[in-house]
Image (cartoon, rainbow, N blue to C red; front, side, top):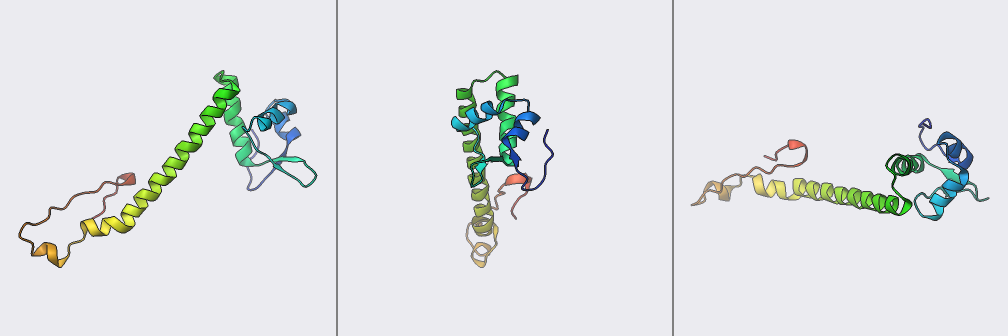
Length: 132
């Protein structure tokens, strides 16, 4: 495995040697849109840590699980969609915490003198914390 460092970039030959794949295989993965290394002004491919992690996943799927490249593309797209949905859900929960939690759970003067008292409800949010 390649040593991890912040913002470190690797050339195609280093990545190919480290993961025991032919450089043409990496070029094929790029043509298929599975990985997208950055390019220098002269056209040299540079792989970031994210590219290398994605390559590890691709190699795991193809070598260990026998998934073909079309299946790898579907799996990677589904993972990206799931990650996006997770971010949207976390943003929604933060919105609830920031905006709705106060309105739902604050005791104002109206609720103290109401004819029918409003019962407090517990809103369970991420990490098991309740808004009081």
